[in-house]
Image 1 (cartoon, helix red, strand yellow):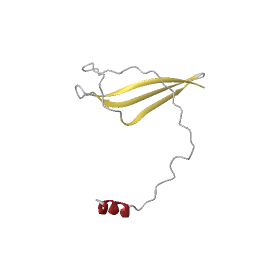
Image 2 (cartoon, rainbow, N blue to C red):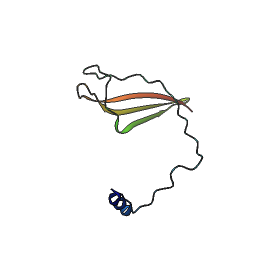
Image 3 (cartoon, rainbow, N blue to C red):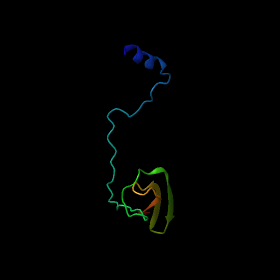
Image 4 (spheres, one colour):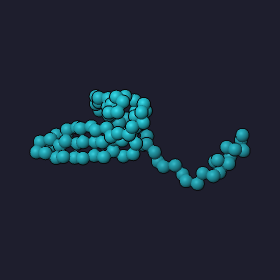
Length: 92
């Protein structure tokens, strides 16, 4: 077992990056209520994790910017692929 660990350590060629700075605070996240999306084919809310990068459309207005985001996922019940659509408003 010791020989195996030694081989792994010897094959490491790249040093690790600096990582997170010492004494760095945790990032604060807003908790936003989100409604469950349903499959249009079977009505299930059970889905796979979102796949790939989301498609984002920003529509600036005079006072408010509307941000529409589409995320791809698959229904675990029937296998139907879908794009979940979320809209948010940002004040300018």
